[in-house]
Image 1 (cartoon, one colour):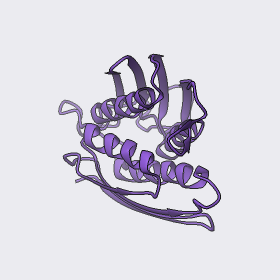
Image 2 (cartoon, rainbow, N blue to C red; image 1 turned 90 degrees about the vertical axis):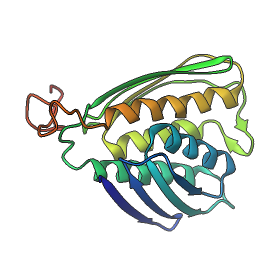
Image 3 (cartoon, helix red, strand yellow; image 1 turned 180 degrees about the horizontal axis):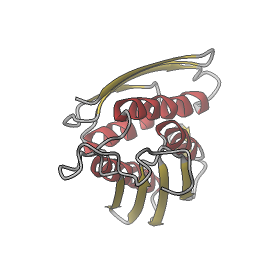
Image 4 (cartoon, one colour; image 1 turned 30 degrees about the vertical axis):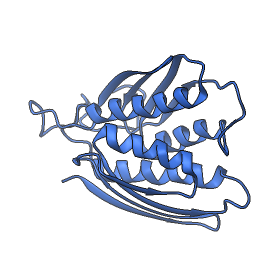
Length: 201
């Protein structure tokens, strides 16, 4: 089983993550931010990655540190569980509709982080969370996991539907990309024999 545990301790947040890439989508999520909890539950359920996360942050200031550090911690846990990334499918693509909204996510578990974020919102807040923080979460996750990540909301009107389709599309793309390819389970999916550290692989 490809599992990991991450503990992040700063003056702003305390975060514990337990993750299993080969899970069934079981989750226990508590960040103190209700909508973020809901999104991380979607990430776990639709990726089939088991996820336990407990986060305590300086929510009396705002939600920025907790949101960003949660992305960092989950990304680190994914990277740790992947190890040398031997045998993985590596690439993932998903297009996920949610009512009137539809989002496309393409990703490469390349060990090189990069985020393309073509998502916009019509309001500055969704519930109590600033909508601008969702890009911060995806940026932090991409960087810490070593994933090239392209997120494009194709269309949509309802902000809840837009961001939920982003997380669900990430989950579905990630689900395929982390799976072991039975035809190449013993090799790293790169002509270099390793992932990361170059612009050509």
